[in-house]
Amino acid sequence: MSASLNAAQRARDLDALSESTVDVLVVGGGITGAGVALDAASRGLTVALVEKHDLSFGTSRWSSKLIHGGLRYLAKGDIHLAWESARERAALIGTIAPHLVHPLPFVIPLNDAVPRSLGRLAWMGYEAGDVLRMLSGTSRWVLPRPRRLSIAETLRYVPSVNLAHLHGGLLTWDGQLEDDARLVVGVARTAAEYGARVITYAGATQLRGDGATIVDETSGQALDIRARAVVNATGVWVPELASEIKLRPSKGTHLVLPGASLGYPRAALTVPVPGETNRFVFAMPQPDGLIYLGLTDDPISGPVPDVPFADEADETFLLDAISRALAVPLTPQDVVGSFAGLRPLAAAGAGRTADLSRNHVVHRGSNGVVSVYGGKLTTYRQMAQDTVDAVVNGAAGRLSAAPSPTRKLPLVGAAPLTELVEVAAPARLVRRYGTEAPLVASMAEDDPSLLAPVAPGIPVLGVELAFGIRHEGALSVEDLLARRTRLALAPELAEGARPAAERILERWGAAALV
Image 1: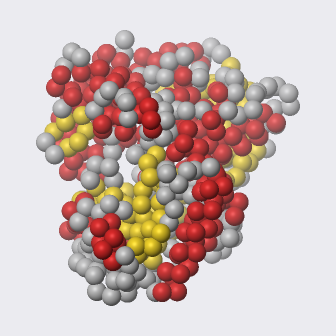
Image 2: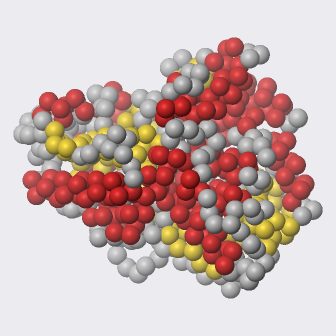
Image 3: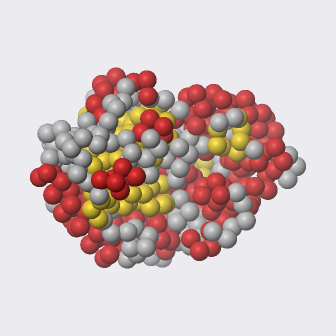
């Protein structure tokens, strides 16, 4: 089967669903839903995935872009979740998506912002995390061991820290995603390669144990889909389709900063939140020169918005927290963008959302629909495996499936680093598309200008937009700017690229209908 998603394929898949019954219908096109679709399809089940908006429209694109080894959970005593995170990180960085997951150093500067007692606790956590790294099979050549830094080394990694009272730093390493939305698209396209029908802009209005009613958002036409099992993987919106489930969503906010605001750091600057022993803010450098500063953890109430936003209190909290460690404090004028996501946390009584478990839950409703929620981006694969196991085990013999192969199943474009360095294509494309980079570059065969940036000062190449339309299911300019690229995280960059995106969509959108 083809891994290509486009307008023509979407139309064919919609027609096919109206005339057949699938083994598993997955509702939700974030990382969890895409993971479930891939796990089920790779076991030999027939699968359809429907999503009301675009792939990675919801929480999955608002993460910290980290594939982390679970240090925070280790500090809370949740050994199971910490080990699960370390094990899944090992699979992602080693086999599943080595082109998308890269090592990122994290530095805690030891100055007035970090009490000595907290520094000692952090070092103990780093050493314990390194034990998990070794046990999970991640080589120290991929994620080096933690170590203490001199003053000079600390400043080389994070040059903006306050030199006054600085007596060194602590260094550890973790996994950084090139792009969380790109991971979702990669998982969904790999599911399509295994035969899954992946249909965006098709919202489910009612779920049943034997199917669902969906609405084609592009035409308004309703369609009944028949399925032997149904999975609700809509994240923070799970209760809208399974009213018996209660969640306590929390909002996680990031600010977007230019690299120059922190002296173009080589590591994620890590600063403790005042009065907390296990909460930090992180200023994380990104491959294209921006910095993401996060993270808040605040409860929300009321209706769940499609797109949550950062507010003034979030901005103040993050800027004040990171500035405690800086020579020159940050101000709102340093901020070029922001984003916020909602964590679908399982309701577990009173207390702060920051203290709620990040373990996932698989729930079978009275109508037979299986819902999955909670969890973390890092552990999406395990969530998906557990969900499909529950689907098959609860099918009373109606479904037969092989064991999950996804721990050792590379995504489209994945290859060992020794192979990636040999790929003949621009480095940016290899970093984002892996072994598919030459195919992306080939989109410029009839128009060499597509190998140039879409606008001055913007790193995205025209071929990336064309490839997003032809092979990654992008149907609109917003799909291109907000999810196939992440230019919308900095609105000024998105507006600079919009004319090119409109022009390329007009050209390649017509081609994608063929």
